[in-house]
Image (cartoon, rainbow, N blue to C red; front, side, top):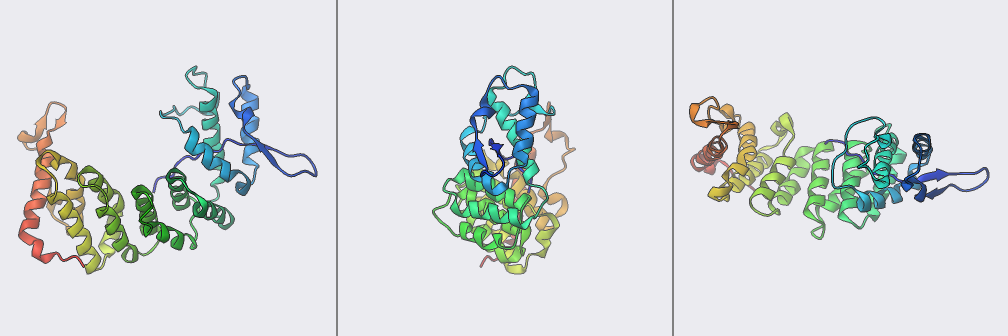
Length: 295
């Protein structure tokens, strides 16, 4: 799973003999100098994760910008006038969070993340925590917490799917593929279900470790997704067809010859290439569907 940059916009202050305290206002000041911003970042890096994490989540959810930034280092001191004080705080926070996610698989940090996940009430908070736990701070106790999320019908599908993907990533594939397939098929037909299938079965050669029951369940789900696509939606099933072809070890994973003249467009392959890949998979399924049984 790819690591995500989480947000921490907290000012760590401490005086001898007093408890640590955090304030956020200074991070948003427009008049902060380069040195002052750098100092705030370093002081926040020295804060304990258990002290800063609750506010991290709130800020991440409430202040996330809707556009991407450049990659200059340190980006919070970029001269770009389009960056507001909030934007700069976001960038400072990303560096701080990345610092706190190291070293990986640190048990005390993992326990902090799991505690927050248990208490989280918003889907956005849960997505951040699940992704961070899976990418940075995995521990055995995460397994049951994530399984509970998978089985919680009241949870959003994106949270349930992320929880399932994390279990498939870190645990036995055969143990958790049944619940993963269930979550895939709970998505809306069409593009959402295609995307859920692609994300949740993206495990390369590990898919060949599936037992016959789970392999057939994945195949049945995937071909079912393709069969329910309307004519206007066929090309959205391209990656589903490719994944099925990979599992089945078919020649070119159902894709036709992409060098064929009829597929060459002005700016690349024509839509017909992707549509024909899906149709090739559907034809194969029509001829072999009796061989595939889902339990």
